[in-house]
Length: 305
Ligand SMILES: [Fe+2]
Image 1 (spheres, helix red, strand yellow):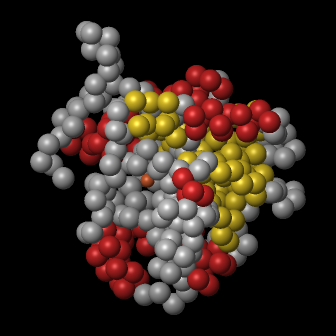
Image 2 (cartoon, rainbow, N blue to C red):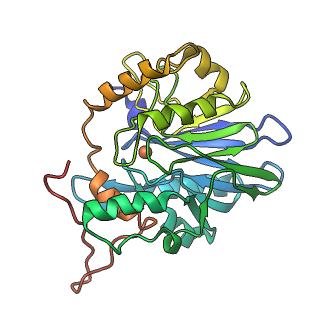
């Protein structure tokens, strides 16, 4: 897609619909097609940051902080204060920022409790048996159904496995941050072929999301545009997905979707930075410890995938 809108940073505000409903800002990160979110209680101005990207130039193996700087600038401009640094799952397409954001905001960081099981799978793949310890690297590990406060609003955790075995959806009033489950209605659904992922689990997770109230605002984790659409989009209601999601709209047969999902996933290459990103993300966004020359290195399994 040649249109510059998919190559530019972009911010959109989805305003609170009234009592109990959060203000949401989506901040599009064009390098990885990720959407980072700020979810805020309009009454207290307490905010949760979600799935913020630590920019990683995969051609030069260099980090920069433009995306997290942009998110924190928005927080400041809106007069918000950061109460939580949240991730929905250990991301494969980008490096995560929870350690750096905790350092910069003082807010606790959190992810789903099943990230421990994901870490075991990847510890074996990397042959790094003692490297990952989510309980050490995240302040909170949320279980299914757990709730926590965002100012006067309540956030609720819904386990949404399939893309990874420990992905979670964060619910806040009429907003749900579904990350890599649904894509926009004109794109469909997310892949389910990473280690620990399963299309059958993803189907169940998506059905649970689509069982939320019809006017729930669903915020997805990625958008790459389509042949017909050259501007990134990330918000649609449950009703819009049920009426028109090209993969899972009302009437879709589970087995048909699973077969289609598996066939599509079999054609997809690994995300270009997955093997570097996951060994940082599973350390809560910390680089591997420096070696005796003071430099940090990542480890890459060869002939494994
Ligand atoms: Fe993902």
